Length: 395
Image (cartoon, rainbow, N blue to C red; front, top):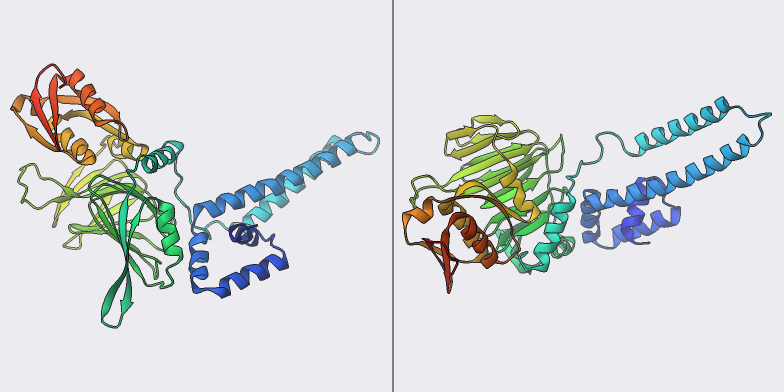
């Protein structure tokens, strides 16, 4: 039995004295073990093990109860149906009472649940080599921060292993994805973050105090663990996103309609589920409702309601989804993901629009063929550039 199982049994109140002694010895042997212990307490996989153990115990209890009922039912002279029902009700009440005692309503964090589609997309991303990032771990020193590691990562497990061996609880991590990669990371509190390509996030190895804070430059989708006592903050150059357990997307590099590459970027925030607010640079707070979309630049807010959130969530499931999207808005998304530049030969090709869904981990040429067949736009791939013109045949 590994240490995670022992921790789960302890929380369920089912650990033996020998197992508790083994756990205490493990905690005392290394400072990193205590950090890992805290991380495990906020890891959804631990509670999955606890749930499995609970089900096994309940299954044993029901089997024993069934045997007793079957035995009693055979003696009709002394057993009535009402007495059997009474016994069942008593056991059910005990199970509920124990469950309430083991899992108090607000004592454990509420971790976000990943759908099967999202789990499959994470696996496919790792298999195709699209999961890649570098991380720097900074430690506090007398003169400020010192960087001790710069590690290349290829999976969330690699990051978890690195953090498990980081003894300094005040350490800070800076994780950066590559120009054509993404990364899924799990923070200490169980929050899941899907970081898009060429994006950067700063986060502590341990959330202390009454706030959970990260800094984002780029695009990320957050599945935040619910914690009423500690709100979660995403700090950006244009303001702060504050929430208490929800799903939302933040893009700090939303381009303005002027198409001026030197114009300051806005921060785009899309709320999918839950409750959230935006705190602008002038300390004004704006509440968002599900399906709200806000653009924030300085103290200026632009709000849109009842937006279709599916294009913002589809990438978590490994898809590109476009709804009546112009080619000149669609191509930057696809081309950057595959590491290409885009050149337009005419304005007609820019104006063409498309509605469709594509595999993010599929072939670029297959995607372009599909777009060409629907829109009549021609794509020519030359070295690291895609040349776009209006035509009827894919080159």
